[in-house]
Length: 330
Image (cartoon, rainbow, N blue to C red; front, side, top):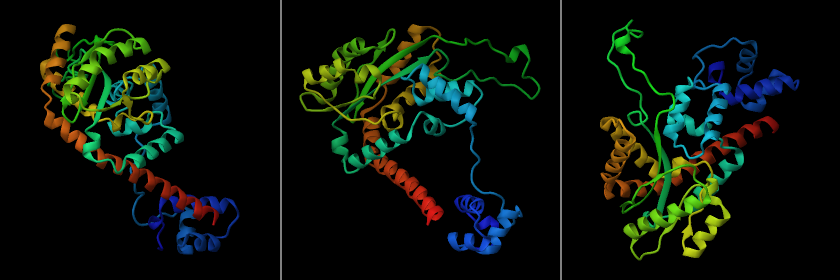
């Protein structure tokens, strides 16, 4: 390993740290296992060979702060909703990047790893016993997508190429549930959701969903850790009804297969193009009803792989951090 370009980002960081501690180039090269010339070239800034590898960070710290403010306004938003609002603020990025930035602290990451470890041996049959639920927001804007326009270069400001829009379009909040057997009835939520109103949803929509999808068989209910969900009175409701609730890590919508169904519905809304709130609700119900049990079963069947993948990536990250620390302080 003789060229500066051959050094990894971790090795370069360690070289800089050891240099500040007063170590000689020879001591540094022996510590990290590279040639002394590689250390010298890095410290002198004479990079050779390949240009710096790796993808540049796609968001700024200011952009990350904007996302946190968006999340804090409404904890019930899906990744698609967050990505849309973040894009409107001027940050173009992917759903995966949104999730990596969303309020996941070290404690929450550890809980996700613990959860994945506990569930890594669950079979498809076990996951099929879980009734997954979630809320999602639908806007009157072609499935949360802006209108597209055909135009040539230089026609951006032409009146014919412009269309007025509403900054805060009409929208509806929807609660739904799914299992490997299919989907349950939707609930269109009016106003803010508190513990009392959420228990009404459970009584009039969750129980019918369970009856439809499981009959007399036992099931486990899943929901996230929203305040209305984790309230003491809500916990008592489940106890009184003899329903087991699946433990769920915080800020983990990516683990919930129902998120994929919300995306399917929103894609179909692009073609429906509702003009009124009633049309929007009708289009949502029609799209939801078109989801087949086969689609739901495929999503549930992917859960074991998803848990193993989550655990693998988290352990890989921890191993990389441990390796870096051992090089620094060995």
